Length: 296
Length: 282
Image (cartoon, rainbow over all chains, first blue to last red; front, top):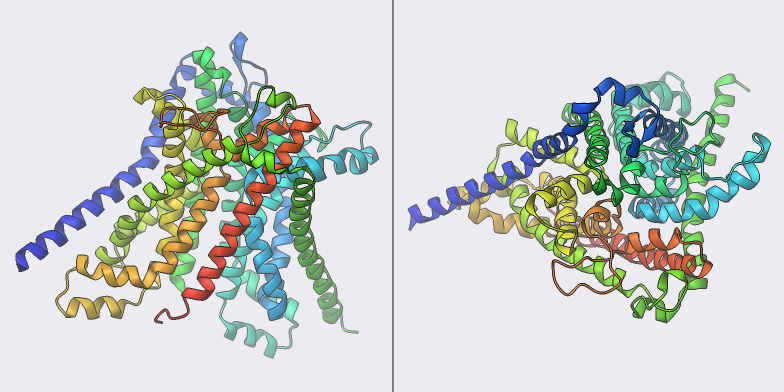
């Protein structure tokens, strides 16, 4: 009787361990799978060529990824540039100043932002942001803009990463011990001085990790960006140029890629790059965040 | 006034602006989707399948997408739960807190959580070709399951971590094996499992990039796993890219339906967390 119980216990343990290991292997299998699928393109083009050429004509065997990289980088930078100050101020207010009543409105609002699907942001972007840029903002700077621009994609993305940044910041800031704050107040500093030179300074590694995490989230965002970015394979020279980030490239061409083996390999190469960069960014930021969590 | 006090005032007004901006954004998004959606939606749209000439503005609805999304979400949530619950138990009850393996596992699931759904889609697509599967309901279910497993695991794990270790030890000291202790753990983290499930459902129903490659699209409700299936986000996306106003209006109506579903799920999750976790032992 007792033996049976122990055997059962061991057996379940073994089964659970197996499931866990199989799930973990997914990361490795994914990397290998994408690499194997994109291998044909390495046979014809060097990695350096793929990364630095800017001409994209799949049917003429020209695969320059530079426009797509620049599109991705621009859109991500704009998103972070908008979201970072906004989320920092919001998080500082929520942890250092806010009354209970304010929190009761702001936290559910952020929850809603976090739960909305990508495509809804896309719909909102095409209805609000795109017309705003083409009618109100762009005429001040350029002759004509359709509104489907790098800037539109950046704005929509910034709102999508906002809830992630705020929730990470709030968690970081509220883990700073109140004794540190008290010490700062007793030296005569104001709340803002305390927030800046004690709370955010103490959380600096965490802020860095959170931003890296937000960048990697922004890099892979597909549908919302695809709907507002204009989808022209060119290197954007201003905020009012259309762009074409990597995820949009993959999503837009999934149907036709099967007609040409090298085309498919090129798109899988795009997926492989996204996978690799996101993997690297995620591991870095998570390791930092774990270390902070452990210190408390 | 002292310089530091002036600074304080300026900083406070900036923060107020930031908070107001966030609230305005949320209201703007919800208001846009609701006002557009309600002015377009009709009963016919949510209860009928696309008719002939649907994509040039003729009659029909997007019931195919609603049902398709429902199929994919229900199946992948069920499979996701079956796979992730054992993993969470293994990490929290079977492994020690200091276990190196548990550390690596958590890191890996966090990383998987961060992998964009388009990459999952591309990967699942190659996997399906390798296995000889065509784009189908089954493909959509597979990729959505892969997508939500990390969410399941990480959010249940957060709750399981707060599980009082004394309770585990009390159970062990009475001679129970780790397997027999699971009952107690389940009862304690049940609200956590419910919230995690809702979180995953919300993510699964809103995902477009993953199912684009794998589930395809179809104007009818799939009757077997090998048929293609439509999903709500893709239905919105495709209809919005049509030039006809009638078709675009249906996209707004579909966006409204999707938003309402997601909001209800999110509210339900909040309700469960606030209501059922009160008697959790500390």
